[in-house]
Image (cartoon, rainbow, N blue to C red):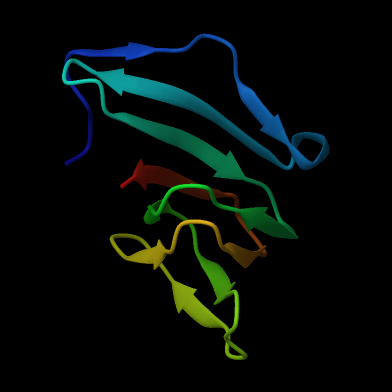
Length: 104
């Protein structure tokens, strides 16, 4: 799907890592939330509270989940799952990485 309909958008942006990652929270009528954002070229480490599904909308990235030794690449239309109370490293090079984070 290319858009979300009938949502509320939190106007204040979530800005992380000195602006290398910027997202906005969207809330659906049923109370579920997602974030929609962009990561600029960098290598960052994110910590999770709840489980997350990271959906790639544009660009590419390499990801290494906590406890794993191998990096995996993801492109448009692909996603990766991150357990709750965990972390992941993400490397973006070249063009910005656009994503939707689905909170489980």
